[in-house]
Length: 279
Image 1 (tube, rainbow, N blue to C red):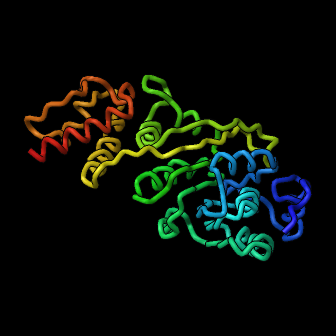
Image 2 (cartoon, rainbow, N blue to C red; image 1 turned 90 degrees about the vertical axis):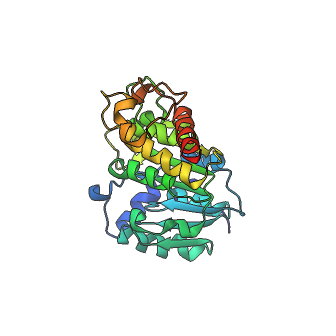
Image 3 (cartoon, rainbow, N blue to C red; image 1 turned 135 degrees about the vertical axis):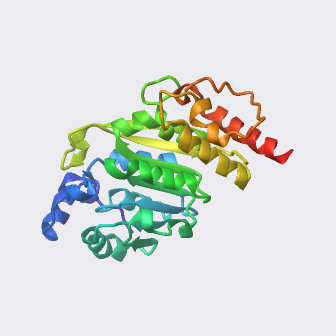
């Protein structure tokens, strides 16, 4: 199939307006819909993910299909999970009719069994209100993901990349950095979207770390992450007291607050707890 002209691609203002007008639809605030209209962004994402015809890609919230189209052009097998039935209809009648390597699934990602797709690469434009739950859901599940690429509100990007001691360093920052290496690919101005959001966005790439942890250690690590940041004024010793066995000694300074502890130290603490129980 020949590639469309720039203006006929989904990632363009012309095409987005045409699709919405043709189907008599508008962007829905309830779904946090702001459609990407800058082609260079989707190209950057597919390049960063190193998409090829051997890949299985899971796309969350494809909308009108700006990124979907770019993924399909690379001949990857794409599973696009979309909650909005109107968007599903458009995708089925446009991209699905042109590409046999696309499957459109009308489900709520957080309620779906998304791990069944076995995707090594996961991407999407995530609305602000649901971005953290989606990221945590992906990190918690034992699936074969290798790279994640998401368009997010700039505020969320800053949280993900925050370092220990910084104001934005949180359970989200720590969890992402425990399991992956986040990299900011680009910052996106509001005019890259239609309709324009009131804030800047950013594209972040997360490459998976090989932690090589057994199931029990992973369980303990998540217990630590879930509890360490619950009361930011308290020390780790206080926040984690109910998780630390009697007589346990650690190389980690538990007099620190959670926001001062690097992600790798949480991994070390989880290993030490499991080693203690294994004695």
